[in-house]
Length: 225
Ligand SMILES: Cc1cc2nc3c(=O)[nH]c(=O)nc-3n(C[C@H](O)[C@H](O)[C@H](O)COP(=O)(O)O)c2cc1C
Image (tube, rainbow, N blue to C red; front, side, top):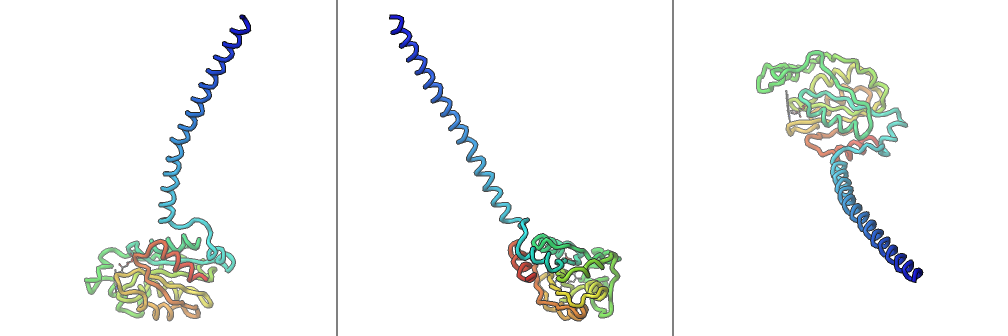
């Protein structure tokens, strides 16, 4: 009789155990189901932002620049448009970036091209004008490939670009011009840049106004090769 009851109690205990285990595994399945979609959503969000932002990994082109003494991106930007593009290029190529800072900063009156006598117009009408540069950019000489960016003023490169190119010995360097503009494009500036960068190899430049991060990257990597 006693043995019979022991058997019954054992059976009931095992039944309880089985039910308890069943609930636990159900719970853990539920937890997994709650976490996974969140993780998936996070990953999706990362994918979207990384597609828009610039790559941080070294590209083949960037690795190449390290071998051949590097790439510099030099720019002048009066109102920030060219600066943005310059930063994108430097990011893609992991290049050093240098700003050309005019000794006398351009005020909005200086840039008011509707006014014949504004400073920018006067400089652009004077072929001999070479506005002074505030900062020492001699470190640029250490680089074999120099991307140079500027806004288009009256179809050409601002005269301060000529000041820079004529201030340093850039013989044997590869110069890659880029610009932003209101639509004129870069072609009208190529002659002045070539003449000022004596002994350098100036390659075909590009107007990168409103270019996406992807197209800036594609262009920059092609030019570094
Ligand atoms: C004095 C001056 C002259 C300009 N001349 C031209 C021009 O001839 N053609 C053009 O497409 N844009 C012209 N622009 C517009 C600039 O090229 C354009 O806004 C550029 O993106 C500004 O770049 P930044 O913000 O880097 O200075 C001129 C702007 C200024 C201030």
